[in-house]
Length: 489
Image (cartoon, rainbow, N blue to C red; front, side, top):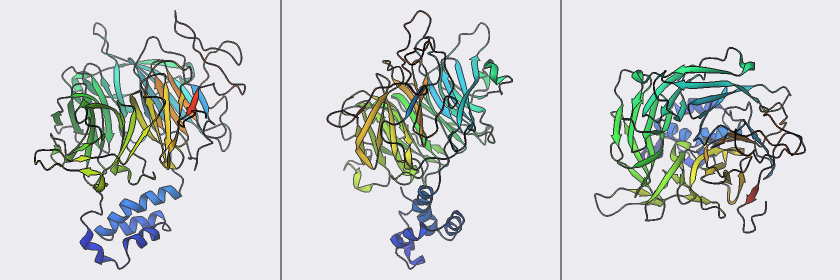
């Protein structure tokens, strides 16, 4: 619910209409907005709902791995596609985490760390340098378990403390020590400590972790949810059971009424639970509807950025569905709400926008928001390593692109920034860079054979990757297509 709702009686505090006041906010600087938000509840709500997002649209936004964000992307199809590593042994389900200083790729028992460094060329984006890897182990004699989820935890800007979810049900806080010899690309062994785990899901696979402010939320494969306060380790965590096959979670503590959203396979695949001072509500507060009565599943959930054209990010929920759709729900949109006459029925909210790739009905496994003017939504699909893009300002002009190598894998995890998208298939991580000044030094080099038609050495005993280097020697050829009737990009 918007901060402005319920404050209608306070409009006498100022004589100007709210619409005029919103226009005035556009010309104010950061200090003025902050001071106005302290004056009264009404103006605090106006600044919170409109002032901050307008300010971010008009000023340069900070992106995780980029010093400055481009105001717009290059023309459709104009980008550099790069693999970030050689293929991993076997088929894995990797997950990504990005901070201001590094990109982490968790695959199997390993975490691959890529550091963010200043560019060697003025006015160009930052460089991504492979630092080394970490292997998580329980010790000799114990069966090893894969990492299934990852999230950075607050650690005073060091960006070395992460929360890891494992397939054996544990959620553990892990410190990743610096690489002593980063140029040698060390592999550091990190001992797990399940006895001091933050959450335990009774041996069930941890599907998803999210961190918001000082809280950590985790969900297991069969619907056990735990929410804990990071600033008070001694306090007990809230634990509820969704009683459904569960895939993903997202929570927001900055909203007027904090909430958690869960993606499941059920008759209500996307549900929202309010977070009260006593903890997480055990029953759903709202069902985010798909406009289709049959059961489905939701595999990915995220929110819009603060400067998105969609509005206040804490009121926007973006989700990827089994039927191949990306749906956007606006918690402020009362005209899209449906309420049954039965007192026992759950209130539902219809999507304000539904996005699809008409050429690919595959399920959506991962979603992320960002891009030029924070107006793009990206979705990783379940087959053929396809990532789809939409500009919410022109939602019918979407397009899709395969990951380098064009393998048959799902895109399990993506992170969209202002002019970069990081993704990961079952074989390796990759990047699309829409920014200027990309050189051979911008991303890690990988071992290749030959020249422009070279192939990266693949796994032992397997066929080589179908990677083809472009004539510029920087980007790799990838297949892409438009969502228009012809499919031509």
